[in-house]
Length: 174
Ligand SMILES: [Fe+2]
Image (cartoon, rainbow, N blue to C red; front, side, top):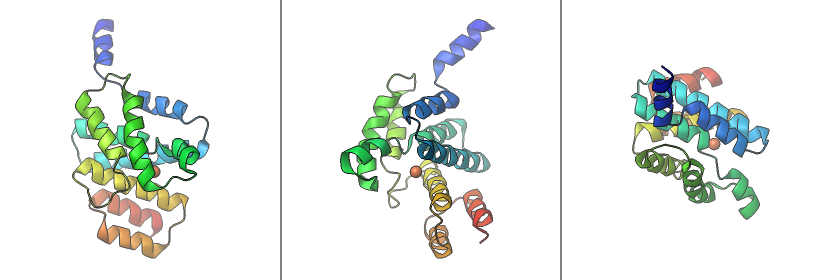
């Protein structure tokens, strides 16, 4: 039994391991940690409700946890966390971050692509990308008290998943 568990563990880094690694990386920044946990929770919830397959759910969760990995670097290097800088720096940083894990190259490629596009609303090319965008928007709308008309516009122009739309409507009483 022990051997089987060890072999399973060696197959892939688990989501709780990605989460604890990312929390350690966040250097005690409670705002960043709260945000990533919020985005992860919504992304996982939407993913499961939309019945995505296990592999896709893993990518969604890992990307949600790491999506803002470049924020500390961007604050220091550029003095702000503008989306384009974050995408550019984030796609490289997340590769380094995951390089000592046992994730497959294609998984790291997709997570890096998602982190590198999470502010780009025109390139959405898959359910993982769609769910990351929706979950990040929900978290940002909560944290920054977005106006109702902004939220309504996002629902009608960007949101696609039934469960994401229901969540947003329930949270913001729309
Ligand atoms: Fe975010």
